Image 1 (spheres, rainbow, N blue to C red):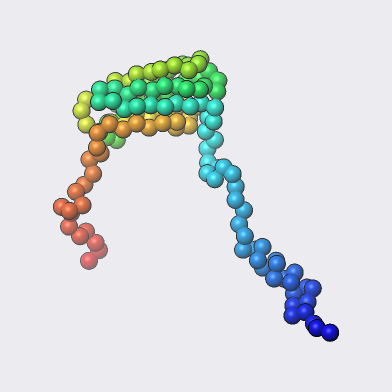
Image 2 (cartoon, rainbow, N blue to C red):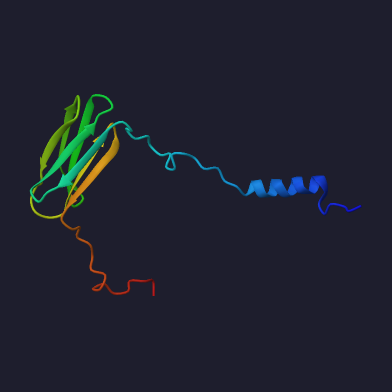
Length: 130
């Protein structure tokens, strides 16, 4: 008669060690601030303006539009929506500009125009702690 290598309790210990290494997966994967799941906004950045289309609106509310030039807030608008519609937002002066669209505090869309002013990686010297 052959004897089991681990026995009944040995396999139970092996399974417990195996299961202790497993991690739970939570859905949604990013359980941060809840977004307005029923509100959909799509947009297109044109050279002179941004065109936004509210495809679906979960319930009536304010759509906040924030325009940034660099890091400075240039313009902020709140548009009350009762249903789907198309909006146009004129870009301010030339340069890098961002339009952030929010609904109930959740960011739905960001459109950029231009290129951000980033430092030139070739022109910088090593600034380490020497």
